[in-house]
Length: 238
Image (tube, rainbow, N blue to C red; front, top):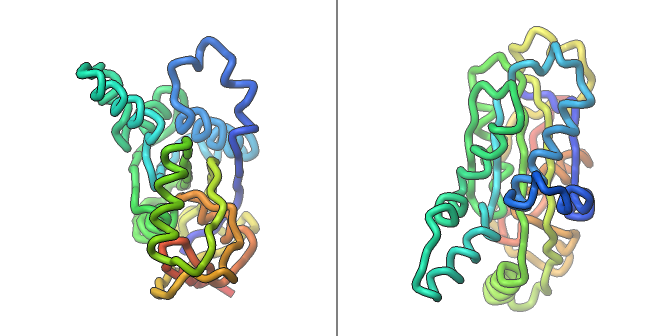
């Protein structure tokens, strides 16, 4: 079991002031959002509790912004090695580790719009006694928005289009074997289940981004549907 004791949710407007700083000019939007979400969590709990933690980064699209820069370079028949390196899904985790101390183990999980849920499954299966922070982040440029809309409209032609937005969520979870598990209030999650079903107009309760599953969990919702047509059922401890 995992107990969710702290959370954060951000959109691009929350990093507007960070974008103009010289120190951030070479950082991706994914990195800026993820670091700010993590920093928000770390600033709201005791440092003794969170001095060392495991980090699970979940992202449906990875560094899509950097990937499209790489594609544009390829069209010009030149590829900057740093662009290729920064386009990898795991590059965000590497950039975070340079800015945030205390990370014992780091993992990147990606599976489309079930990325956060798969990250949560990894956390549930872990035997660690350390606190775990799950971060979900995705940034959609105009190209990625167009791709998503075409995919969803092709797979569900009569459902209407969900609204996609960029953003990040972060949740601090304590495993059941953590010595302070009973000292904090919070939602306790026991398991997840998945049911395949069609995405319909009634499910247009977005906005969505691939890794924002925590948004629904924070509302205590028992089940919710992702645009890919998978219903997620959350089993809470009563």
